[in-house]
Image 1 (cartoon, helix red, strand yellow):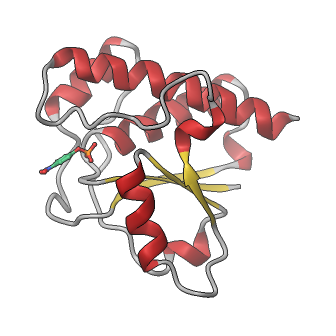
Image 2 (cartoon, protein in one colour):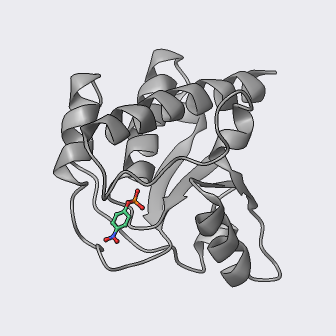
Amino acid sequence: MRVLFVCLGNICRSPTAQGVFESMLVERGLQAQFEVDSAGTGGYHAGEAPDRRAQAAARRRGYDLSAQRARAVRSADFQEFDLILAMDRSNLENLLRVAPSNCAAQIRLFMSYAPSWPAEVPDPYFGGDQGFEQVLDMLEAASAALLDEVAR
Ligand code: 4NP
């Protein structure tokens, strides 16, 4: 199963989602069954490492995001991934708008797997450190819920 996490800049939420999800795959012995990547609907941070606040918050929970580099969503993604998971409704709308008619991927909100949480992962970029902790809490919940659903 090929999973692409998508936010706006690909430097805060979606790289964190990738790091959390990859770590959970290792924990559950499922790495071989998945390919995971992340991208942004905007490309203005392309080539950059994740935001240092996102990296620091992730590192405190044992996730290493340092090897990731931002990139924009590309048209091939809609063929190459099975699941494209948007962090918020704006990301989702942008993805649906540019998706080709022969799109192979299922496109949905990541938090839809964890319905007891808010539907959107709030953008932490312009806020304080607490925002990054909240993002991590939400992404851990949704990652576990996605893997539970795949297991069923
Ligand atoms: P992300 O956060 O979408 O979670 O990576 C953002 C990063 C950068 C900007 C906005 C959101 N920006 O406007 O530069």
